[in-house]
Length: 88
Image 1 (cartoon, rainbow, N blue to C red):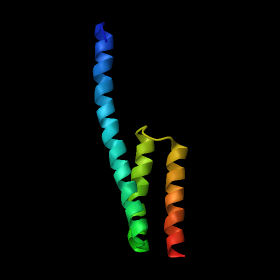
Image 2 (cartoon, helix red, strand yellow):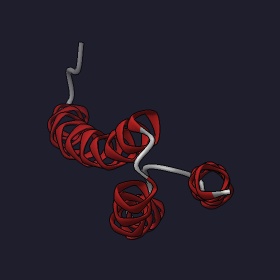
Image 3 (cartoon, helix red, strand yellow):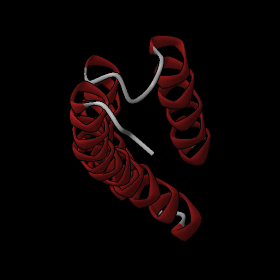
Image 4 (cartoon, rainbow, N blue to C red):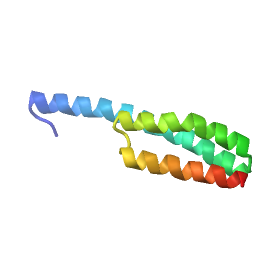
């Protein structure tokens, strides 16, 4: 348990940041899930539209420190590949 005033403050800050990061991660995953659902339904137009909306959200999570840059690129790339394959 935090004892010194500075460690108590760090604990408070960590708690706040954790809540913010959790919300951002959840929001990003919601956008990814919408793409997944459109893919499973087989609707390429809906999947492409969902991907168009999800891509900036995934990249935003990089700038906010939620994901690593390459992890986000890999996610976008794999989703885009699956959307493209659905149309073929």
